[in-house]
Length: 266
Length: 266
Image (cartoon, rainbow over all chains, first blue to last red; front, side, top):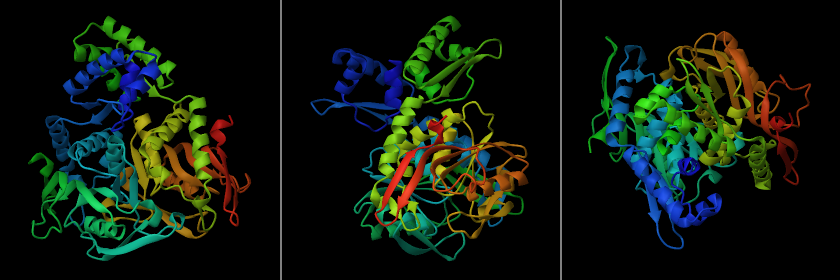
């Protein structure tokens, strides 16, 4: 039972046949089924996720990591409180949050929240742009059992031939370049875009334009913190999930207001 | 038992008091101890890691994720086989491995191997330089329950004041700059450096120089792939752990030889 629990936990979104379990533990399928029923109950009671059972010859069991809305809200409320610390205000109205994006436990929680938000979408790959979105993208991809593709802000020698596009970043108002190696993404992929911070959405829009070059489609957009100082009409697109929203920054007093994002409004 | 297993697995290198478990499950400490003994046995039999029990008032239990040497060697032998695919040879004798560093399952395995290699070191933080080392650093930090610090190749506005140093990268033979925000690292920290690829070690040496500026010390260096084409006398330092070694590249035939690294030699 201990081994089955760890086996399932370490293989999210992966179909495991009952036969594989029966062989692994040299046990009858009926007793495997009974054990799985207990594990399913504990996972659901504790809000760890769902255990989907598929019947038939190609059947088996699949662990879908989830996090209850109430638990996510508690975590993000605490994150908002920490983000409001005055020493986090940087020149230009930016928010220092690199330290928080370096905490494995918090990242695992955030990845699980994104995985819950996008659990029902049909996704082939998680994409982000370097640098600070990378740990969030991997934490999300871990839960969804998907590969990660990182868009570069330069064109490195070690990547082979690449597609580059220009975009206007909301943070610098300058034209910047992002690129992705040809071999990094299959044509027609369905892509979940994850990033750490979004103002008008220029960087995410850049990734969307880049995806067009690969005939790939956007399956979803998730941002950790959005800046709510941007009006809806200025936002380049509106279909995204945010976990926190920076609603006001007073540069003189260094006061900020950060509230849970649109994920908690629906 | 299922819940205790998942609770421990999700909190590596964290001391959990028996009282906390007893309160959580409304059970006597003696029955908690019995359950822990069973979990310990399964973890050790399956090579998942160790369960350390500390007696006394400040005592409790701590899960140390590990991977058996034989299992690690199997995984890295398969990695070497994949790295030897001729289409991975890039101009300049570089190796395309971005796709592999985007696979969550492989990263978790590699993180666990690094965590095993450095389990006994006294470490405060895991450090890497953007971009491709980042997922490896987080996978390792997850297992060790440590924060990650990312050295930037530029000096971004969103980081606040930073310390910059120049270094000579083995890959370009040019002087480059790397920088780290003042607030990202406490003075005197013991740092585990993780990177994806190392030739002469110029980039890692740059990180060592940067650490001097923070009065921090190097607790260890782990690289995923080292280039064995560099002689020991050319290597800038020799105390590091590598998981794979690129021993030969023939640019004409695109043939490469990749073997398990020095971790498996000791």
